[in-house]
Image 1 (cartoon, rainbow, N blue to C red):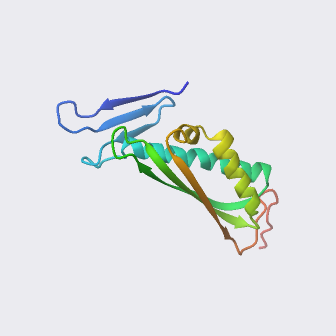
Image 2 (cartoon, rainbow, N blue to C red):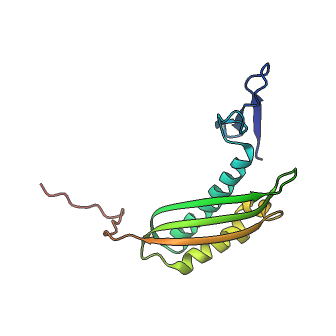
Image 3 (tube, rainbow, N blue to C red):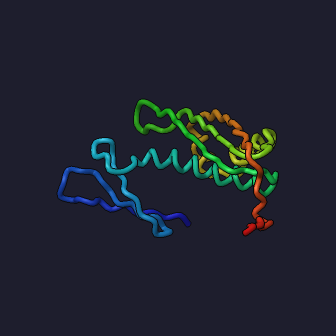
Length: 155
């Protein structure tokens, strides 16, 4: 079960700032654009999507396809409906994978699996939004260090 709680931080003020607590006891500050002291709740949805697909894709790339990934980021942009509820109507997801001899087909398959099978946040957002996903590969030039083999240090 997933749980969350929000508490108004200043009940006697006109501000609408909340402290959010997740079921796993993590805290963050929520606000609106007027207060500007924390993310808006809808921004957390975009972060949730980026994080959800990132966990899926990096796991698939490393464990299933044995890709030598040295860096990875996911960027999400979303358009919202003009009228309430201002749900996401279009989502653009861009994956940037850095590493050695990264296979584009492996990235495509990992993204496909995330979007079609694993990412629960994406599955919910696809009910109201179209998705457009892109990726790029940034090739590393230095030697790959195999963490399983210790390097020798000469004195």
